[in-house]
Image (spheres, helix red, strand yellow):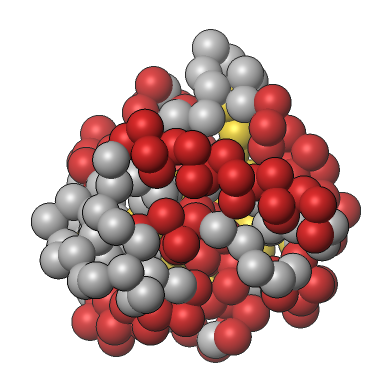
Length: 217
């Protein structure tokens, strides 16, 4: 059967310094039976790059809200890295618009100011190396513990996918398992942080199984 307009769409949110292209293979497989929407964060891919000062969590969440108003809600949000963090933040603020969440190599941010500083310093280094648009790195920085502090407010079903070699986000998977309604944690062999690029078939299969379980479609 093909996609049904009545079923929740799968809305993909990519990570920092990536684009919707990273989802192409996994999303193409899922699009056979599901409505799939992928888009580029501001300053990424084919989206416009506003000046510095316009890359923050609130603006990114507003952009995601615009996408969801077009795709229809409730939706199943599929987020990698920063995209997963944004999916969590959006669900905290707009729980009725999210049917379920798929977190791919994602984390909830930090509570410790020292950890935030270390993370933000690493983002600055990466921004210089990658040559991203001026100010774009701000979208990947952490300035508070909003998501971490409100994780327990999220009640929708969650799937966690992580690459076997993604050591940086392994601890986050444990936090999610202890705090969220995690239906399954899928550890994909022979993959690191970019698990959806390296093992798209495994990621698509895990998402499809989870989607069927939580939506009945």
